[in-house]
Length: 322
Image 1 (tube, rainbow, N blue to C red):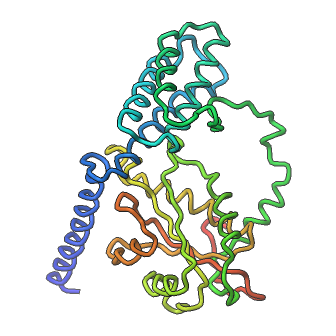
Image 2 (cartoon, rainbow, N blue to C red):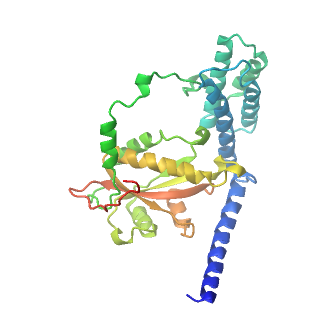
Image 3 (cartoon, rainbow, N blue to C red):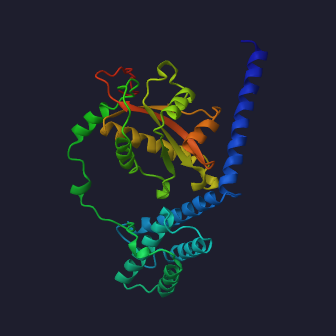
């Protein structure tokens, strides 16, 4: 390759990278710092509450809790909850429900160790009176939980290892529709995935419309040789609005963690699957239209799904270190 060609190629790569980053930063700013969309404002408030709550919940989960623990943070949560309600945001959202449950548990703990936090209790009572729904019905768990070694230890590692070795990328399936109840069961299990500060920024979309599935099938990169043979697809996204500026691109890490859990959840439900990465320069407009994906969510990947055929044709795919 000539020096001129290499130079031009380098310039082209830099141009593409800068263009992608510029567009992504502009979108992130609209969804985090300069929010105009009312729905994204709610998402952002939900994220702020969830992260604030996690800082106290971690403390309640420690073996030894220091006297005076979390009082400044508890006051901040009360302020955030009050502002949340003054803005007319819905109490039914995860962040607010978790904050409500956490504050009730925190006050309960403080009383159990005879620590006086009367101002926080009074503030929380005011927040209760501001709620427009009956928060006594809130069943969210919060605080610390103690498990015995017997409850959390793995007693059958051989079975789990054997199962993990059976999880392969499957690209041929029975030519039948994947039942929605099977998809929902797998997603419920996958939702046990861990996330940064328990903010749970990942969403998983699917459609049962045959024409829409065909359209998506033609858009996804990496499936060209088998197009028209995958019964359905899941699309995984992560909310940019659930991260601060110093956590830029962390949504991809959370999305990747979820993908690992999703893959195993699908295998447990005997649903064959194959992960397809998404490219920055792919046209997303049609995909977002089909699944109604909001602007503040980044597409992480697609997962082709279907029931196992009598024989699955897989690649050997030797793993490093094995």
